[in-house]
Amino acid sequence: MRKPARDITQDLKLRLSELETERVELARRLNEIDQLASSYRLLLEHESRIWTQLPLALDKVLEPPQTKLSQSLLNLLSNGESWPLHKLVNGVLQTGYNFDSKSPGRVVHYALVGMRQHNLVEKVSDGVWRIGNKDKE
Image 1: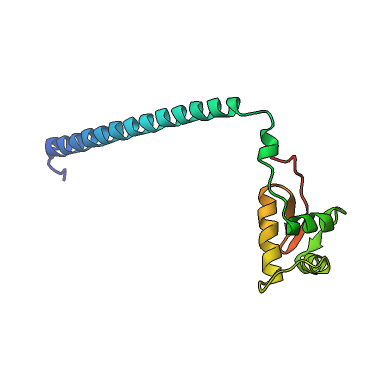
Image 2: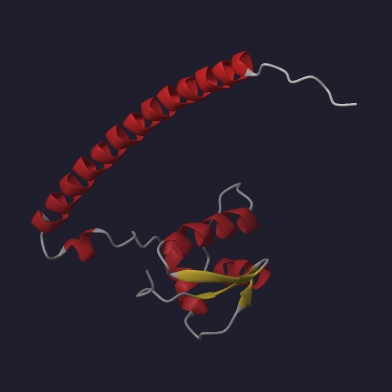
Protein backbone atom coordinates (compact mmCIF):
# COMPACT_ATOMS: atom_id res chain seq x y z
CA MET A 1 0.00 0.00 0.00
CA ARG A 2 1.29 3.47 -0.92
CA LYS A 3 1.93 6.03 1.75
CA PRO A 4 0.00 9.25 1.40
CA ALA A 5 2.00 12.22 0.09
CA ARG A 6 3.25 14.60 2.74
CA ASP A 7 3.39 18.38 2.33
CA ILE A 8 7.07 19.34 2.65
CA THR A 9 6.53 23.07 2.19
CA GLN A 10 7.40 23.85 5.82
CA ASP A 11 10.54 21.68 5.66
CA LEU A 12 11.68 23.51 2.53
CA LYS A 13 11.00 26.94 4.09
CA LEU A 14 12.95 25.98 7.21
CA ARG A 15 15.92 24.73 5.18
CA LEU A 16 15.84 27.86 2.99
CA SER A 17 15.88 30.03 6.11
CA GLU A 18 18.87 28.09 7.46
CA LEU A 19 20.72 28.53 4.17
CA GLU A 20 20.06 32.27 4.16
CA THR A 21 21.38 32.54 7.73
CA GLU A 22 24.49 30.58 6.75
CA ARG A 23 24.95 32.80 3.69
CA VAL A 24 24.85 35.96 5.86
CA GLU A 25 27.40 34.44 8.29
CA LEU A 26 29.71 33.44 5.43
CA ALA A 27 29.46 36.93 3.91
CA ARG A 28 30.41 38.40 7.32
CA ARG A 29 33.38 36.02 7.59
CA LEU A 30 34.54 36.86 4.05
CA ASN A 31 34.42 40.54 4.96
CA GLU A 32 36.62 39.83 8.02
CA ILE A 33 39.09 37.92 5.85
CA ASP A 34 39.22 40.77 3.31
CA GLN A 35 39.98 43.24 6.12
CA LEU A 36 42.72 41.00 7.51
CA ALA A 37 44.27 40.57 4.05
CA SER A 38 44.22 44.34 3.58
CA SER A 39 45.99 44.83 6.92
CA TYR A 40 48.64 42.28 5.98
CA ARG A 41 49.21 44.04 2.65
CA LEU A 42 49.76 47.35 4.47
CA LEU A 43 52.19 45.71 6.92
CA LEU A 44 54.06 44.08 4.05
CA GLU A 45 54.39 47.41 2.23
CA HIS A 46 55.63 49.05 5.44
CA GLU A 47 58.22 46.30 6.03
CA SER A 48 59.39 46.51 2.42
CA ARG A 49 59.93 50.26 2.74
CA ILE A 50 61.85 49.83 5.99
CA TRP A 51 64.15 47.14 4.59
CA THR A 52 64.94 49.11 1.44
CA GLN A 53 65.93 52.14 3.56
CA LEU A 54 68.28 50.28 5.90
CA PRO A 55 72.03 50.76 5.48
CA LEU A 56 73.98 48.29 3.36
CA ALA A 57 76.07 47.23 6.37
CA LEU A 58 73.01 45.75 8.07
CA ASP A 59 74.49 42.25 8.06
CA LYS A 60 77.23 43.53 10.37
CA VAL A 61 74.63 45.03 12.73
CA LEU A 62 72.60 41.82 12.85
CA GLU A 63 75.55 39.53 13.55
CA PRO A 64 75.10 37.69 16.80
CA PRO A 65 77.31 38.86 19.66
CA GLN A 66 80.38 36.73 20.26
CA THR A 67 80.74 35.83 23.92
CA LYS A 68 83.79 34.12 25.36
CA LEU A 69 81.71 30.93 25.70
CA SER A 70 80.47 31.01 22.10
CA GLN A 71 83.99 31.72 20.85
CA SER A 72 85.28 28.73 22.82
CA LEU A 73 82.55 26.52 21.40
CA LEU A 74 83.20 27.69 17.84
CA ASN A 75 86.92 27.02 18.30
CA LEU A 76 86.20 23.48 19.47
CA LEU A 77 83.75 22.84 16.62
CA SER A 78 85.94 24.45 13.95
CA ASN A 79 87.47 21.09 12.97
CA GLY A 80 84.14 20.22 11.31
CA GLU A 81 83.55 17.10 13.38
CA SER A 82 80.43 16.34 15.40
CA TRP A 83 80.86 16.78 19.14
CA PRO A 84 78.74 15.30 21.94
CA LEU A 85 77.69 17.80 24.58
CA HIS A 86 79.84 16.30 27.36
CA LYS A 87 83.01 16.67 25.25
CA LEU A 88 82.13 20.28 24.47
CA VAL A 89 81.61 20.95 28.18
CA ASN A 90 85.01 19.38 28.97
CA GLY A 91 86.65 21.40 26.21
CA VAL A 92 85.20 24.64 27.53
CA LEU A 93 86.25 23.73 31.09
CA GLN A 94 89.82 23.24 29.84
CA THR A 95 89.84 26.84 28.57
CA GLY A 96 89.28 27.99 32.15
CA TYR A 97 85.79 29.34 31.51
CA ASN A 98 84.08 30.19 34.81
CA PHE A 99 80.57 28.80 35.10
CA ASP A 100 80.20 30.22 38.63
CA SER A 101 77.68 28.03 40.45
CA LYS A 102 75.76 27.17 37.28
CA SER A 103 75.60 23.73 35.71
CA PRO A 104 78.21 23.64 32.90
CA GLY A 105 76.17 21.20 30.82
CA ARG A 106 73.06 23.35 31.00
CA VAL A 107 74.96 26.57 30.24
CA VAL A 108 76.71 25.05 27.23
CA HIS A 109 73.47 23.49 25.96
CA TYR A 110 71.59 26.80 26.02
CA ALA A 111 74.54 28.63 24.47
CA LEU A 112 74.45 26.11 21.61
CA VAL A 113 70.69 26.56 21.24
CA GLY A 114 71.19 30.32 20.91
CA MET A 115 74.03 29.85 18.46
CA ARG A 116 71.84 27.51 16.39
CA GLN A 117 69.35 30.37 15.92
CA HIS A 118 72.14 32.26 14.13
CA ASN A 119 73.21 29.20 12.09
CA LEU A 120 76.56 29.16 13.87
CA VAL A 121 76.05 25.55 14.93
CA GLU A 122 73.65 22.77 14.05
CA LYS A 123 72.30 19.88 16.03
CA VAL A 124 73.27 16.56 14.47
CA SER A 125 71.28 14.40 16.87
CA ASP A 126 70.24 14.46 20.50
CA GLY A 127 73.18 16.00 22.39
CA VAL A 128 75.51 16.07 19.36
CA TRP A 129 76.54 19.32 17.67
CA ARG A 130 78.74 20.54 14.80
CA ILE A 131 79.70 23.85 13.27
CA GLY A 132 76.86 25.41 11.27
CA ASN A 133 76.55 26.91 7.84
CA LYS A 134 76.37 30.67 8.55
CA ASP A 135 75.24 31.43 4.97
CA LYS A 136 72.21 29.17 5.41
CA GLU A 137 68.92 31.07 5.69
